[in-house]
Image 1 (tube, one colour):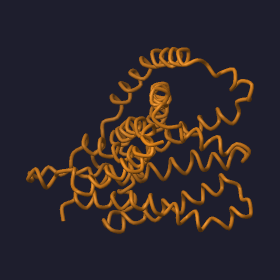
Image 2: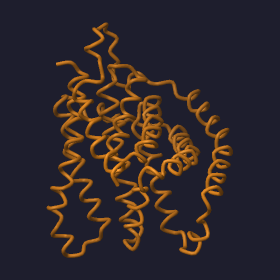
Image 3: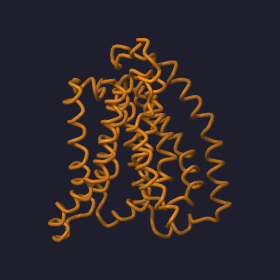
Image 4: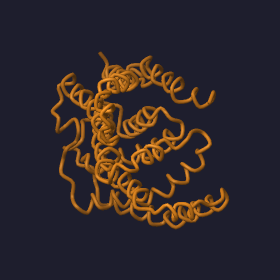
Length: 301
């Protein structure tokens, strides 16, 4: 069977799995809920229960060594620092995008953080920053980037970002997840290491949670501005961040010549167009699932 078809079928299974298994895991976790376990702890258990089988399934089915599949290679300290700084200066643009798309759906990430208020600092940090950074990066900048590498580096980046966006099943989150997913995939491809995306992913989520946790209520109320003032403030932040972001990307590209030995082999064999066609029935089904569960609920809300 064609590699693209196999990869697409695997990710169709991932999407179906993510729609069904959370309900089953909720039933399993009724016992701790009844006994008033910490909601952040329940969320961490649920994420582990959901992600681990998927992450073990692909290396087994593809017979790929885990280190190769997930690009668990060392990364130079300065390169890791550059990746974190790039993500930091990308944040104002993501905040602006979140604000501009806030009419589409409520900010589910912000709602999740608010639901963990009163659960302490470290358990929500585990649930909101540590586990998502590990599991999501292994699935999308690990498995997706590896399994679609035969289509070429740029296509693998775009496909990884596309699937990452759709799996959020939320119009607002999909918009910024596509951009962040593309940037993270680019960082991994240039360094050959999953830590190039895992570390900035953790830092972004940890920073957002820390800002919410440590901000005093009176400061949060004072920070609530009019739409125009908020838009102006975000725009100015973007203008300020743009030259730093451009400079960091330029420095990163100059420093990181991709190490082909650490990256999946790219197929250069000439094949028929249809055999490398990405939009197979499996991907069409994934798009339909996104429309049904990510778009229609918004339209009819």
